[in-house]
Length: 296
Ligand code: HSE
Image (tube, rainbow, N blue to C red; front, side):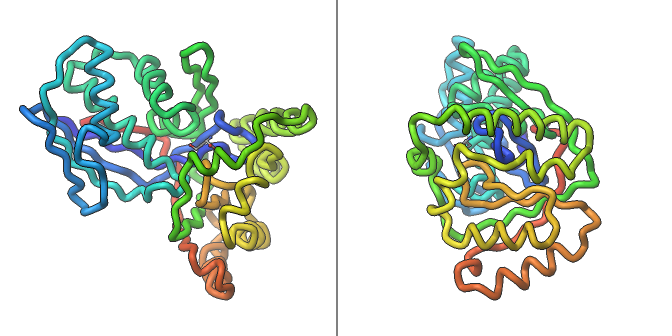
């Protein structure tokens, strides 16, 4: 039996649409062993598909198929603390768990690059699966079916404030809200900031993040799908966040704060409670996960 632990991830980091992502300290756990049938359960009672449509199963099966190995059946037990359809990489965590677990069951024939490429082909973009697998802050390019990623550990002086609403936003809906084409000025706006944000994380120059995480490609179209989201942005900025952005496709709003900003969390909770719209949000404090997925 193998056990895989995979962190939650926060993609885009503002301007880095489909490219940047970081891993945080919230984890799904999956145990997996071959058996004669498909036997899938969530041991924490979360609602998941228990047939061949299950994402952990489909991802594991993709590994068996790629290697030409038959898969008669598999026993999967999932614990899913990462909330689903909230922009915290729950589907990527399932994909990475399935791929790493199946690879371990087969004697670890695949390289990290091969597994990352397979995970990206299932997810469609690398910005969650790469940090889920590698940990830390990761910048990725998906080029002609290959993923190229560089990871950098995140400074432990940073903390992450996830404002998680009690409603879901499906990634397909949040992507459908985006225009099909972009102006050159908006493209330049984002590519320059995505590069600056990467350099800022690498150099530890967090004051740059305020400018570097601004975005012209997706957040303005998605905020209307997140009632109370604009107020959450205001709250986090007013309390001294380095960066505030929609986590992945939303609806979670992520703030990057200094670990010693002790007022931030208490004050933010008070302010959330003062407006009916922001009552839907609960606040979760996390640190970076610099380890990524672990197979035991
Ligand atoms: N980069 C993706 C998006 C992340 O913003 O749609 C969600 O999977």
